[in-house]
Image (cartoon, rainbow, N blue to C red; front, side, top):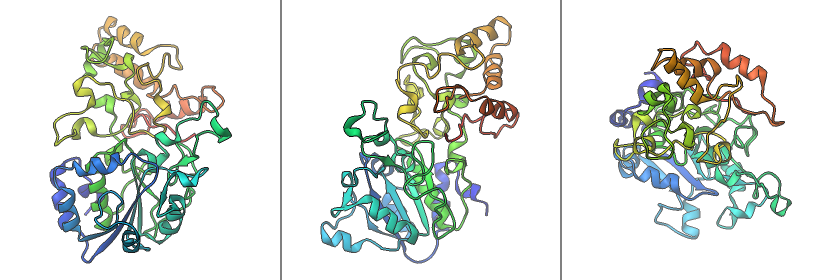
Length: 372
């Protein structure tokens, strides 16, 4: 059975995945670093199955979870598996100020570096664990002379869009897989449940360059947006909630990869863009700095000197409403306004993205950018 049959876009298929879970107890340790516990809260909102059903069906022994477990104090620490089948990290790891995140007065950095090599699978749940997230936001004021971010926050194998993270780029768990990253602030509960279902059923997840499962993170928000027709006609809203494409008020949909537009949240009822809120790119590596300020255009001008509004209006004038602006933007490349560390445009990156544009599954088509 292919991994794609387990990792599905449809929540109803989670049940089938659970029924195929491996026999015997599966020990899981869920650690929390620098986090708001939002990823756990998201998981608890999973409609089918609920977390309790998941634990029962998988026969998982959740040996440690600081938010959910009943034990506390020394009993909680003693119950933690020291060689878990699955190690889950929620939250970033502070490397400059280790005391910023501890468990039983022991830095989360030490817990991660000790337990990760013993685990069969390591999963980074949320942007903080995967890429550093908001704790890794740029230290613009240079506070405390602590470098790029105040606590030295990193993800497990990435720091924002670059490697290395805490475990280094060559790390592999006992299964031979690198860290499986479930980006998002927070990620959809399905992403967590279906990823666990996939690995425990012995299937190898197909990962992208940021080590995210492709079925979740290949679709481009922009391509499935309910306001897409307005973009193609060059009709833009002046503020959130107004009719029209939200690109001019900060929507990062052309640069954000996830299937939320079709999967939806809250028991499949809605998603940010459906209620007039622009996508802020929270599923992407580099969030939060990458799309700041959140209420401004992601790019004022692309590398070819044609802004997105002009491209849309030109398409209308040419009589190719609905496809012209889209084709123009694709030719120019979603996300090609990316800047290198020195502030210059990267011609090689542009050429690479343009050359691969014809491939419907290419990284350019999905708006993915290479790690800097």
